[in-house]
Image 1 (cartoon, rainbow, N blue to C red):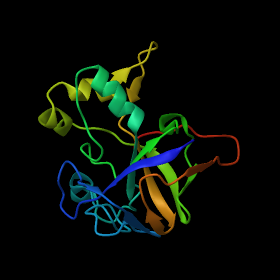
Image 2 (cartoon, rainbow, N blue to C red; image 1 turned 180 degrees about the vertical axis):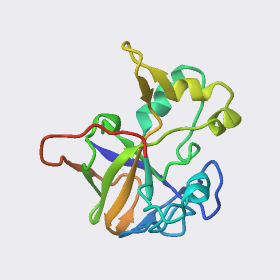
Image 3 (cartoon, rainbow, N blue to C red; image 1 turned 90 degrees about the vertical axis):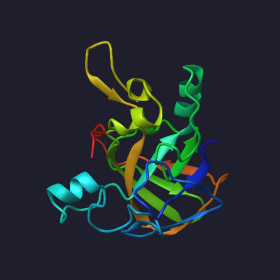
Length: 179
């Protein structure tokens, strides 16, 4: 069963986000009280380039299976420590097409906009970690494993243990690209 395993938020532009008992998603904005909430970009490097860009990164979702994979490689990483708002289990986030809708709990609905493009700060958190979350496939293409980004379509409260329902967009499906 696909479910939320943790939720995290931070009002500061910090690398990690502390776990919470619950978060409230706000339609068109993101996570209430989170530094990345808003209709326009909040990521500092993107704001410097063009502060009027739409915020396609309102909610960061990461699969707990990545934490398991990292632990097996010797990197202990907990929920929220890589900046994610919603940690999931049982959903192949990286395999979803652009535009997939995820119902989180009873009310909230987010739409997946693309892949998170992890940066060098991950190595500041744990040296060597960037190599674990960005790699290359057999054909040499870059593989980004640090979760997906989404916008909030329908607001609501999200808690650990909430069910996740996946609604794929109409075909043809577009693969995820970094946003």
